[in-house]
Each structure stands twice: as C-alpha cells, then as structure tokens.
Amino acid sequence: MQYLRALAYLSGQVVSAVIIFLLAVIATCISSDLKDRVILQWARFNIWTLSVIYGITVNIQGRENIPSEPSIIISNHQSAWETLAFQLIFPTQSYLLKKSLLKIPFLGWGLAMTHPVAIDREQKVRALDNLVKQGTRRLKDGRWLVIFPEGARQPPGRPGKFQIGGAMIAARTGVTVVPVAHNAGVFWPKNSLLKRPGTIDLVIGQPIYADGRKTRELNAEIESAILANLSQLSVAGN
Image 1 (cartoon, rainbow, N blue to C red):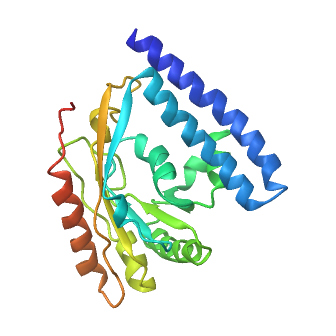
Image 2 (cartoon, rainbow, N blue to C red; image 1 turned 120 degrees about the vertical axis):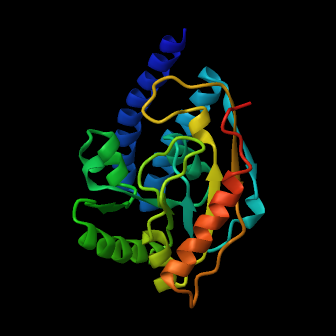
C-alpha cells in the first residue's frame, strides 16, 4: 500500500507538471501575474494530494511575523515539501537553485518561468557574485527570495552549515530576513518516495533587520534564530 501511494503521488506530480507548464505558457502571453497564479496551482495541487493520499498537514506558528514588503526567507532544508508549501504561505517568490535543475523537462522549464536565482555551484566565487546580483534584481522586481543556506537537504536533527549568500544579499540591500524552521523531513525524508502521515510543524520567526549589518554577524544571528526554533520541533513525528 505504501508503494501504491508513492506511485499515485508521483504520477500526480508528473502529470500535473506537464499540464500546469502548458497552461503557464499560454498565461505568459496574457500577463506575468496570471502566469505566476497558474504556476502556483501546481504547488497547491501537490500539497492537497499530500493531505489526501498521506494525511500530511501543517501547523504554522508566527504568521504575524510575515512583513508586508518583499523580504528574504531563509530556512532550514529537509525535504521537497518546503519548496511547495512556501509558495502557499508567502507572497510570490523566487528560489535560489542549481542551474542544472532548469534542464529537467517540464519541471525545470516551469522553474525557469518563476524567475529563479540560478547559479552554478561548481564556480563558487562567480556563483556568490551571481547570487547577490540576481537576488537583488528579484527583490527590486517585488519578488520575495527563498534561500536554503544549508545548500542541500539535511536529516532531521542534524542541520548543516549555513552559507553566507542569503545574509550577504540582506546586508547589501538592507532587506528584512524572515527566519523559518520546520521538521518536514520527518514526514517526507530526503530522496525517499515513501512518506509518513502526520502534522509538520513550521515556525516563522521574528523578522531580522539587516540594514547597516555586517554579513557574518547577520548570518550568525539568522542561523541562531533558526536553530533555536528548530530545536523545539520533534524529529520523531507525531
């Protein structure tokens, strides 16, 4: 039964990705805003099917901490879940991601339509420079930025090292940072088709103001805020 559920969910992801991509192409000819709304439906559909097929829901704390202006969302990274759910929790976003992902048929092409900050991580110095330039441009365009400073998904209870890219953009632009912590990896583990039913806990921390701050000092505060909230979340499920 677990594998049948996994197959059903994966099939829904693939089919819906093709349909939404084609609709987004049509919507692009009308307006950028309509295209963004169409693409959002893919995340909405996948989160809905998660609740129907697996019984995975989310408990969100701290919605009142979401600023009214475009900000930088910096979060721990455990699962594919957060890349879907954040689209439904926060305003229109651009994600920091690997450039190679844009080559994936339909899914990658759809990602390219969301104006991501796409970098080549093998070229570290150039990647950081491109991150700051592209990230600043997206913020000026009124989009929020989503950055996972650990770089790759980490197992619950074992957070990775926080890279400075997100803090550097915030320090240079003075844009507010929204620290987010969650335990999605307990229910949708990294590189796993199988998922567990239950309620994901997500905490939106108090905004961290970056104006006039130094990058490393700011990064340390962001990491501390996320880890403090993360330590209060279960790594065993509920």
